Image (cartoon, rainbow, N blue to C red; front, side):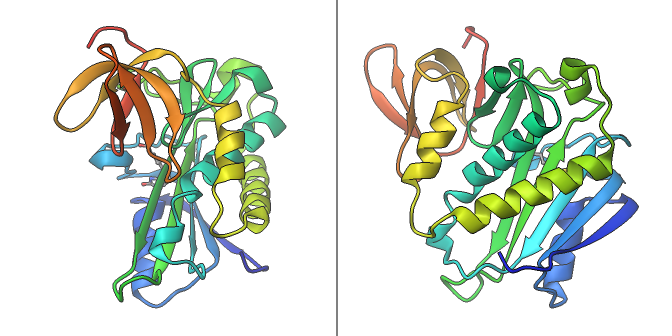
Length: 248
Ligand code: BTN
C-alpha cells in the first residue's frame, strides 16, 4: 500500500462502503480511510444489515492496488488477521480471539467484527478499486444477530474509543498488506489457520440453498473452505455462513 493514507471522519453516513464506492466512481483512487460515527444503512455480507450504533468502529479503506482480480483471494484473510491484531493490542486474550471463515473475528466464541470487501474490475483483470469495509464491536452488539455477538468491552471490561481503535487498525492493516507478497497465500493461510475457530469440529453450514452439518477441514489454496460430510463426502464451500449449532 502507498504511504500517506488519508482519513475522513463522518458523524453519520449511510455506509462507509457505499461512500467509498461513490468516491471511486467519481475518480478517487485513495488510499483513504472513511470512518463513521454511525451508519444509517450499514451493510453486511450477503445483503444483510450491519447495525451501527455510535461507539463502535465503522470504517472502509478505499484504494486501487496494483492487483488483478485473481490476486485478491488472500485479502479477506489478511484483513481478518489485522482485525485480530487490533483486538489483541486493545486488550483481548490471544487464545480466545479467533478467525471464523470467511473473515469474521470472534471474541470468546462470539462475533465481534465483520468485513465486507467490494471491488470492481470493469476492464477485465485489473482492479478499478478495492474497498475493505470493517466493523468492530467496541461497545455495542446486536442481541438478535444470526450468529451470537459480543463486544471488546464485554471481554476486557474496558471501553476503547473509536479513534484509538481506528489508529491501531490502520497501522495493523497497512503492515500486513505491505508484508504480503502478491501471488502468495500459503503464509497467510497458515497464520489464519493457527487462529481459526471450529477447525476439525462439526458445524452447521448454511449456503443460499441448503443447510447441513460438516466437519471443517481447512482452507483450500483460494480461500474456500473444505469440509467433510457425515457420510465421508468431501465438499468445498465458496459462499456460506458457518454456525456453532449442531442442529441442521
Ligand atoms: C459482515 O460480517 O456481514 C460484514 C460487516 C461489515 C460491516 C462494515 S461497517 C463499515 C463498512 N460499511 C458497511 O456498510 N459495512 C462495512
